[in-house]
Image (tube, rainbow, N blue to C red; front, top):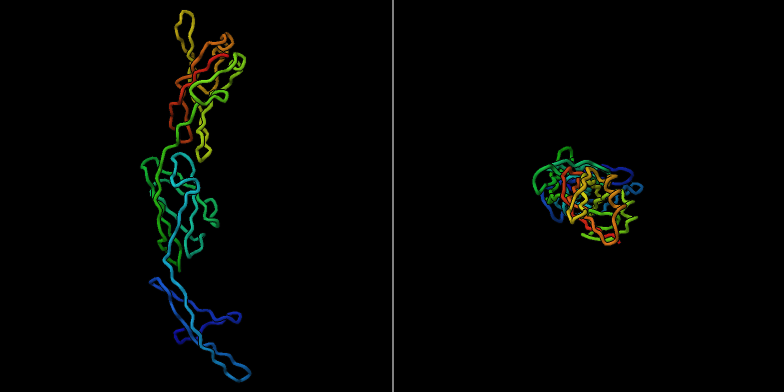
Amino acid sequence: ADGTQLDVEAGKGIYTATSNNTGIKKWGGTIVIDNGGTVIRKPFEAEYEVAASSATVSATGMNVFYRGIKNPVEIAAGGVDVRSAVPRITSGTITPVSRSQGTYEVSPGPQGDEVTINVYAQVDGRQQFMGSSDFRVLPLPTPDAIVEGIRGSEGALSAGALSRLRTVDAEAKDFVFEVDYEVVSFQVAFQGSGGIWSTMPSNSERFTSEQLQLFQRLKTGQRIMIERVRATGPDGVIRNLNGITITVR
């Protein structure tokens, strides 16, 4: 293209070029063929387009990262092998899952409501900046307290079903990720003789033997309240959950 002879590999001339700007680039030359002693010359022209280097970082769950869990992301580095991409995060960690697929997991740092992922790539022996993406960082949602399928603020169970209860569970409804929450404490409030309300605590997710014995003595129409439910998620934050009033049917 520039008056020099190209290297030929397996019958193909290899042309390489670099460019400092974008746009349509034209090039050409002459193909010289020795046809049994007769030299044939075939001039030609061609063009190619130079695009700006870029990188795309996509959160595969939502366009946010949640603190306390591993958030999956995919990285595509335009014009280079995705395996050469080197992502860096401003707060937290980004760990490869499969470099060949461009998949990573992000764990945001403990503070701040936004992080940036900068992507670099090895190009011609040097590290080149490919682009960056900003993401919001949110806390995990507060889950719902659930007892025997009762998720809302009230429900009804038979005395027999009450006496067979084992745990108070916690679950974030319709959340994009599966997150394990654990109830760490709650109390049962009940109305005793003389109309006086009393409470029985539990320091775990499980109903205590005293609470289950109380349930066995309840009559149709009586109510108990499961309240002061506290639960923790993988982020270690203790959350106060909704209470549930259960009427004996």
